[in-house]
Structures are given as C-alpha cells and as structure tokens.
Image 1 (cartoon, rainbow, N blue to C red):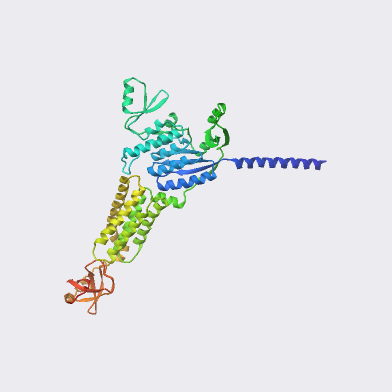
Image 2: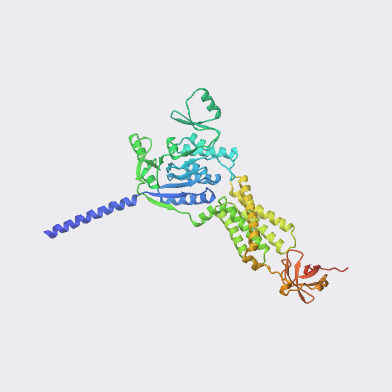
Length: 507
C-alpha cells in the first residue's frame, strides 16, 4: 500500500516538475530579443555601412532595435543613408541617448519610433557646419530643416521644436499649452498685441535640450538611467499587423478606449529580453577610422612622406613600406565604406608612376614630374571630394593633409639626421689630415673630358671606371644607371662631375 502511494507521489511530483520546466522553457522561448546597435562615434560613411548591415541582422533575429547613441554628429550624406534605412525597416526602433545626440545625431534619433534619454544627456544643435565650424549654405540648411521636420511628424513629435534645432532665424515660444516656432516678424507682432509668451529659444540661437527640458516639451518619451530601465518600460505590440513599442500606460489607454478601425494586440514585454549586441566587424571599424575627418588626413600624410623619403634614399626600406601601407589603408578604408575611389586611385597610381620615372630614369624634373604631381594630387582631391559633404569641406580636408605632410617633412628633416639609423645611411666621418688623410691628388684635373663607365648607380654620387682607375664621382643629374657610359664634364678639387656620354655623329 505504501509502495502504491509512493509511486503515485513520485508520478505527481514528476508531472509537476515537467510542467514547471515547460513553463520556464516557454517563457524563455517567447522572451523578446532586443538588438543593440552602437552609435558612439562621428557619423560617416563607415558608420552608415555598419548600420545597414546591423539593421539587416536585426530584422532577421530581433523584435526591436535600440540605438545606443553618443555622437557629436557628422556627415549629412551618411546621416541621410541611416535615416532612410530606419524609415525603410518594419522593425520598431528606440534611440537611447546616454550622453549626446548632436547635429546629424539628433536627426537620426528623431527618425526612431521612440527617444529615451539618460539624465544629463543633450539633444539638438542640428544645423549643418563645415569642418572649420562655419555654417553651410541655405540650400543644405533647407534640406536638413525638411528632413528633421519630416522625421518629427512621422513619429508624432512637434515639428516646430525639431525645426528650432536647425533654424537660427526662428523664435520658439510657448503660448499656453502650445509650443510653436515664429519668424521674427510674427514674434514682434504678437509682442505688440501683448500676447503672453514664454521664449524657449530666441532668434539667433540653435535649440539644444537637456533630458528634462525635452521631457517637459513632450519631445522625448522617457528618461532612463540604463538600458535595463529602457527594457522595463516598453512592451512590443501589434497594430494592424505592424509591430510597435508602447509603455504600459499607453497600452492601458488603448485598451480603455479602443480604436474600432485598428486591430490591436499585446505581444510581449521587453523586460527580461535577450540582448543581441551587434558588434562592429573589423572591416567596418577600419572604414569608420579611415573615413573620419582627421585619421584619414594623417594616414595620407604619413603615406606621402614615406614614399617621398624612399625616392630620395637608396634601396627600399621602412619608409617605403610604411608609406605604401598607409596609402593602402587610406584607399582601402574608403572602398570598404563604399566611397567611390576608382578614378582617384587610378590617378594616384599613374601620378606615382610618373614621379618614379622622373626620379629614376629621366634626369632633371620636367613634364613627367609635373604631370605626376598633378595626377597624384588630383586623385587625392577626388577621393576627399567623394567622402566630404561639400566641395569646401573636401578642399579643407585636402589642405589639412598637405599642410600636415609639409609639417611632418620639416620635423623629420630636423630630427632624422640626429638618429643612429640616418648615420648608417650616410658617411659623416671627417677625413682630417691629423688622422693620416691626404689632400686629393692634383692630377684629377687631367680627367676633364675623359670617358668611362659607371661602376655603381649614381644617385647622384657613386664610383666610375675612368682610364682603368676607380674614381669617386657625382652626376650632374639625379640618376645615372650602373654600366652607363659617362664623360667627365667638371673637376673641382676632389669633386669629379660626370654625365651620360653623348653620342657623336659624323657627316
């Protein structure tokens, strides 16, 4: 009897245990998945490439996307690509501003379904500026104004508040419960009519809001200390077959006053959701770094300096390797970021080839050298033009790169002669008579007009065989190849100057 009771007890316990496990497994299986996309850098083409790939991954694996934002802004064209990618997606999006979303970052945040800000964070100041801090023309400002208003209206935010982040000419005021932007003339007219208004943003300034100010203007949805607080605040719902996110208060209001024209159902809470962190891939990191405003110019400067040092020193060593590596990173990073560089790369390579031809083959500096410099600099300017928002910004970045190259060259020119590595490349020992060295032979003067053969490459100094003697000589041009027939054109003390022998013709 006891055995029967024990058997029944074990069976009941087993069923209860399996049921509990089933409930846990079911809860685990239906938990929401949140994809976190990082925007913690300057907005550029590399970031746009990363966000496009990350959004595709999120659409396949997650229920919602959260942009973890801390950005000072960046390029207008990259911002446009990111905003369009968000608009094209059916997955709900939340922008979590944990420090700042300035300029282009503010527009991206406004494109999201919800905006949540951390205490002390800021959003706004979205007027487009050049790399020197100067505001761009009215055409660009008008485009940003339209984009930011459209993003605000799309997600039921006050478009006048958004516009005040772009347009200095408008005055943002609160009249009762209404917040609106006015022209200077409209504002003056209301003042004359003694209308009571609170000025939120005066004329001549751009609107930047703290988290608390944005909440007071009902411009953002929540203030949250962390991403976990964001998860706890929202639930995924479905409205007419389209997924959205709502707070519990919004869901309750919807259930109390249902819209008969829309199908509505609650899917799952984000509290306890799985977090899918979509990290940057190596190539995406490279593209973001190289296409940033300063690192690209620095890489280009180091690359050009390394190549020119290699042109001026014998053999092929560290400067050439470093120069080619930096140039490869510069062009490769732009290609990864899908910046059109084909023409620029072709012009750069052709220009480099012409310069090499001028240095190592053709004496002096003529048409090939000038054409090489034009092609090389033109190719680089083309790449900057493709990666910068405006021609002015491209010229600015290009000028910074050139000035940086000149500055580095000056520093290297002063510091390199003092290093041990440089001393290995040149002969700096003085041949003093006290050490047993004698003055050069006076009979070197008889070599004037004689012919011989270069025993080494003259670049421009080297050794030649003249009348069976090994003579230290220097060419009157940049380069004379080994085994070239030469003739002595000048003798000054111990300095014997030669040039390639000219062919004589007979009548």
